[in-house]
Length: 169
Image (tube, rainbow, N blue to C red; front, side, top):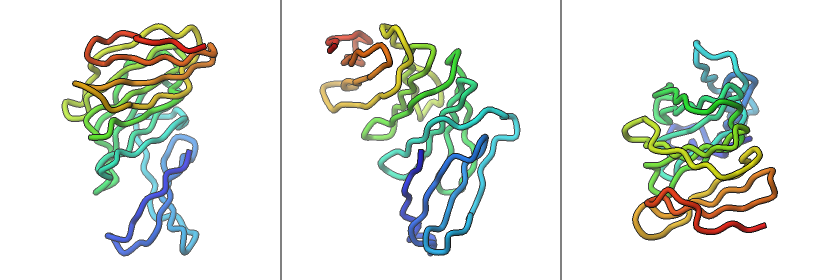
């Protein structure tokens, strides 16, 4: 995964954030040079997915060890490591307001995380193979989440009820 980041506020121009084995590397696209490297000293697992919230405050990175890490975009420092999956993270996505994060994993589960409290809220189960895509949809209350999986199913989840409301084959 690669995230394009507007670094004009810091005088850096356009930046790209990419996975580099167990670390995240921030690149200046104008000069082609690495600006910074972010690494959790307690981690040896490879980065498997990236997402940025719409406000530009947080970056989420999923790892092969099943952990999700939240990074503070202003300081490029680790805020928290979230542990809840039993297998590699395949996808991460923020809600529109940046308060929720969903992670899909090879363990077939989706976990919805509270980014403010920095903790897991609930687990969604129903896929029979690795969850490879998650995206928040706007709606009433907490809204809805759509997920795709290697089981060839797309599921629509009602987040307030924590229940699958539609399965598409």
